[in-house]
Image (cartoon, rainbow, N blue to C red; front, side, top):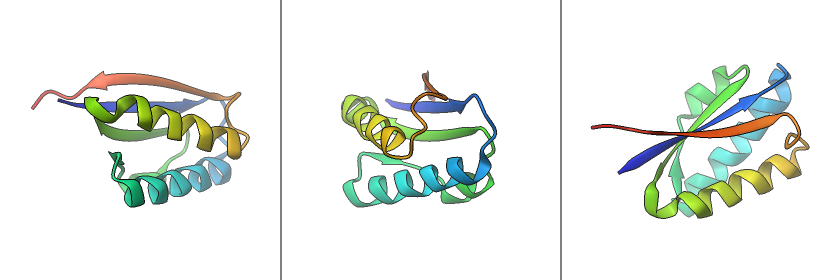
Length: 86
């Protein structure tokens, strides 16, 4: 069953958040662990969504956390999860 990982940011640093989202989108496009809507990333202000299969959740969260750290956003980001019902 798919889950949606929600990444909320405390500050509205749109440029850094969108750069992070684009970098994350590229990573997930290559490794196939998760799916992101690049259009939503380009419109993001303080929230980004990542859709992931439960089987790959732990690996996807590791990628998200590493990318947050690389973009120096780990202090202002908060992850939460929602189950997507078909």
